[in-house]
Image 1: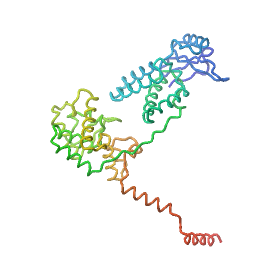
Image 2 (image 1 turned 90 degrees about the horizontal axis):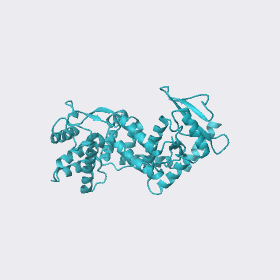
Image 3 (image 1 turned 60 degrees about the horizontal axis):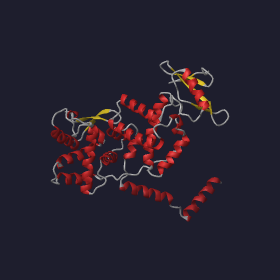
Image 4 (image 1 turned 30 degrees about the vertical axis):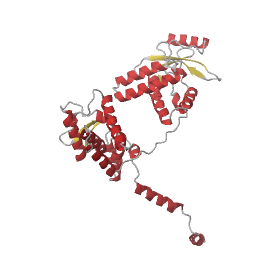
Length: 371
């Protein structure tokens, strides 16, 4: 982590030493109120910092020659993601969000001008046309590029921390019952449509083991092991997932159609194409069967909720769902109707006022004890 020196190396310039021993120089100029400072972008040499400060003092609104723009920070973030081998789906998401940020702020805007006041105006404008959930996605993308900028010395602090972001209320998703899932799978398999057996196996697989859409898209035929487990390249790391008989039969059916051990379980040249294929199958049958809850992520909700209703061991639920924290697993668990009725009965018993006769006896006992 970079360390700040005790003395500036020149008037109005601060030296920062990085972990590898190299230095960056950050010039500052007086801000609006007495004693306040405005920091300029970091530069690699002292002379550049002195020149940058002189130009900024002459014209505070001029774009410094060495200033990093929003587009520059986006490009640097993409470079970091490529080095870390971030999943293609995440990179596509960041590209989409980056385009929205460029439309909102302009790619040529100086990154140092990304202040909390500007962000608050942007949030207000966003909320007039998009949902708080979409704003949360914009915030996450901004967080990634701000993190890159701080790491490279382009920003000194995170401006997002001083903004009042809208809260996203998690809407409860409808969770299909096991009986309804069996009806849907049977309807798909017996529909007579071309490829219906393959579609039924895919749907059954997701409901039987709770795989994410991207995880299914990364499966090869060889990932099904002889001991009945499945090698999964997951969101939080790779793992071996035990399969039940229903999930195993579904994987075997898909593998039989795929062919070679190195072949992808889902047809498609890229991960994005294979993930889109999974979504298309679910979307097609959701429309045909008039069941909007038939989605890949809805299948994961069903799997985790079924686990929770059949065991009190939350660690087992976390392990099979491949979650790192109990809170994440609890987000997926849907309360059954009978559970809601029990909770309503508890609420009614606690909210019912005591009768006058019982209250009188209670006061009498208290007086006796007090005496």
